[in-house]
Length: 164
Image (cartoon, rainbow, N blue to C red; front, side):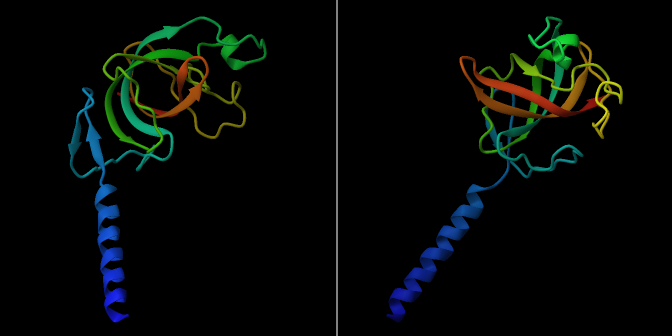
């Protein structure tokens, strides 16, 4: 019986060590290659990506001026909310985040708080204010992936910080 208990303890220790080693952070460059190293993120946005989110550094390539909603009361009916971004670095990602297939290409994302500077007139309940983004602006953001039909995956950015 003692031999069985020792074997079981050894089994648990090995599995515990295996789980810890499998959870090591990794950096991913724009070619999609994984590079093992210690992850040091000094971002106020996100220290470790959770769920279906990732932390990125990107730039705005194109802003879609088309009204994105049929609801005339929607903020995205009145102001641009959709942009094509180029992801320059994928700093961290959660286990459920769906990485864009062409990571070095243009990825279209929704900005539910618009691409304009936010203020109390547009969003009276919003505690954090955003500076707005224009073409060629570089920013750090938390991007979220969601499954959508028929598109497959849609991306959203709720939180970002402009990089000067």
